[in-house]
Length: 316
Image (cartoon, rainbow, N blue to C red; front, side, top):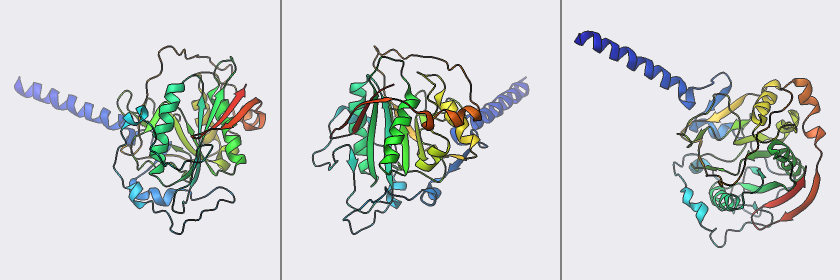
């Protein structure tokens, strides 16, 4: 009897081990994603600055220590304020004291989360200062009463950033905060899913092919896929559509190893109602060609250069 129970235990243990192996983020969806290990990140980065960028710095920025930094930034920073002398320029632009190799536009779709946005800005500026990047934060706010259209707001922000000459776009939800300093906010040679390990529920992927939250993509690649669809509202599948657009254009997706790509998801205000609407049509390459950056229509209500961000208010 003892031998039979022992055999059962071994079989069950082996089955659990196999399941855990395939559920681990670094082992999920290997056909869809390339996993870039820490030692290969620097060679994979897309080094490019905004058009006509100039810096008075003499010394080049060195990213080796950043990419090998295991420091985790405390999420309690969202409750504080930025340190004095942060040297952020009007509109949320920052240029490091050394010569940077990367220019990045962080684009945040937004509506009705003032306290969450305040904490996001404090945290992200503190985080990004440590990465020695040239960056600007764009907050695209939908001010009308129509259902929230996250993808369309990202398209609007992308158009503004590309017009300003930014070669790299970070499409970023306001409720996500990167934890590890080594998760450098720069584009690599292929579109990158940055937020593959979120602490809710337990630093794991909700789905192997998820492609949302925080995405890094070169501006020319975003233009190639015609941006995101303008037809989705609320939590309606815009990320799945983006995933399909990238794959349809034969662009390989990538992630950094799971120990680097960790994010904290901040709590939403309880009174906020999240609208959920389903699009009337599914993804197709024909629709991709017609629906996106080339069909983008909106009314710009105002653009304000705040101390910590460029605020673009729109009516959809």
